[in-house]
Length: 382
Image 1 (tube, rainbow, N blue to C red):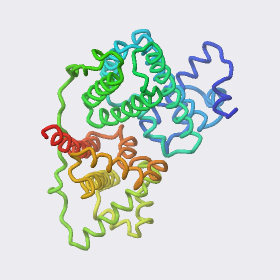
Image 2: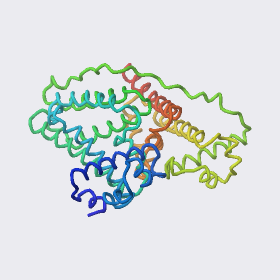
Image 3: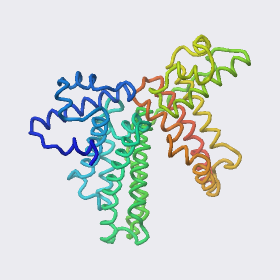
């Protein structure tokens, strides 16, 4: 039994459980606000209004507390999926309700300040292996819950024999978490509304009854607002040599952030890694916030360049889409296992950032989405 398991399974009084829950809520808030690097027990103690001895009574150490926060949040996710309004998630009507309640929940919690599972994953994905495993265990619990739901639908004759419950469950969880990143970046509900509608219509494709296979129209959601484009023309002008140095600093910062996270990367780290002076960094960037925004811009260009390379054409045929899927793994598969998507992992860490940073991230997603939108539109027109 791990220390995290041990602390979670101790017996507490009702008052003790309430105190433990208050500590967990406070710890989640501190993690969201300050990130993992500066997270410490003193901050949690002050936020929860408890003594150090109380904190030590409920949690063995800092990592035990962090893992307990993660476990608490996946319980919230599972409780959402088990609520009576969703029945057993084993009918198409239940899934329609699931799509509706997801958007309602988003409207309730908003786009900041709530320790959703995807937001915590963004903050903690680059932490220790034990914490990453805790997240993985949580995701598998979610997948298993949905797999059981789809298995019941299949056994009752609602899904065709070729339907694979585990694959369907993985599609649901993966798309749901990706939609969360987009919704929090745009600070708009349409990504979650569109994706949950797609998920339910995708499940309907496996319906045994042809009438159930017909895709249902999207429910009306708040309109999509385009993010503000970054005005790169307003950037300071430098000599060719200066631009090369600036680009080298940005590339070095991007690699460090990918390895250690935004909060785990300081300007001094960048200076040492790139081999420049502090005055040079100050010459090209106002502060770390400015450098982070430039890293977002560079990662956006990288992602768009990857998707518009000659091997993919315009991503407007099934063959080119299959080539894209294959190359995503063969070229970057090991990086995904190590640090995640270079853009998605960056987004996950910055979901609690200011509007300027979130607008930059949304702008990047907008450019990325446009590549696929153009290709799929061309396919539909043909």
